[in-house]
Length: 142
Image (cartoon, rainbow, N blue to C red; front, side, top):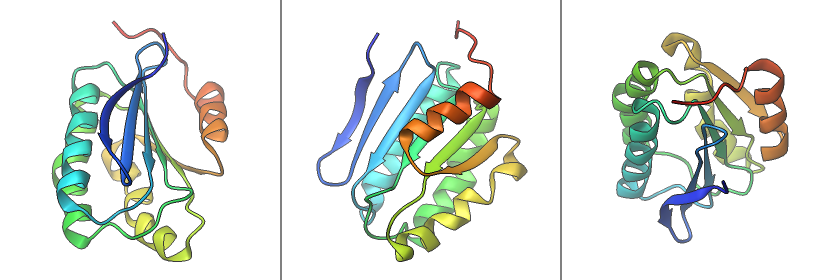
């Protein structure tokens, strides 16, 4: 089954969900809108909490902007706890090309161990999928 778009904010982020792979792919174009940041993460957290998603790939390779302190706080206080409760196995971040965006992403990249799910930095979405295949058993989701 191909991935389905579950959230789309044109010019900012598109979130796809592949049920067979238990994988969410969030492809960011621009950080900046707090409502979009929160709403897309809530959609992702719902999929993880329901046990349907075990992996989140965050593609920030061509992203501009930086998540605000308020965005980062929401992620740490509300989203990551839901990910943990839902049994998320890993978040894989495609490293941004922009140095400014890369610095902004560091906070969430380095916090995964606290939440008991793996965090990886990778060069591409293909590399993220290779890490999942190598380091995480892909069992079917019931």
